[in-house]
Length: 197
Image (cartoon, rainbow, N blue to C red):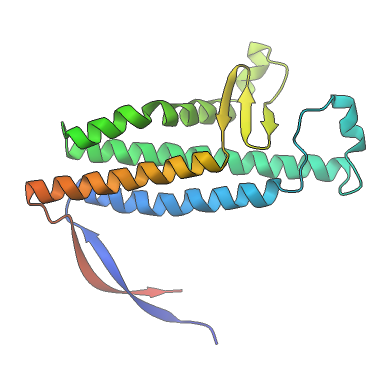
């Protein structure tokens, strides 16, 4: 029997930082989903380095067309992952703007800025592939079992990256809670809500 409606406790943000943190939670769901998709969609692909001529005989598991279709899906999954990572970082910056000069947030920014910058660079590269024609770059990227590279730039998307993103989010949540307590803020209030599914 299908569920028509469920009652769920909802959180309502009292501050801009609180709203950004709620949205970060949603973005984390997207990111975890993308990592699952990447693992699932990449599991049958042999992405170890091999000469281009060997791609003609991809193997008994799939035809050459199926291989390139699966590779395109994986490429799309990685693309959406870097989009979600970029949004996660921008939401963190919204928290920093709403709670400026907080040492906990400054420490997190210093620790993770370079990590998220790699995702931003990769996203920019993926979203401007047409620029590679003008720049004379011979390939569209180098996809390996846990990395995507363009020229000398490489973006890792393996399990350790997923764990680092989770650690970042937990640090932001903990810092937000500490700052809210220190400032006497009540960033969220529970409201009873109805969600139709």
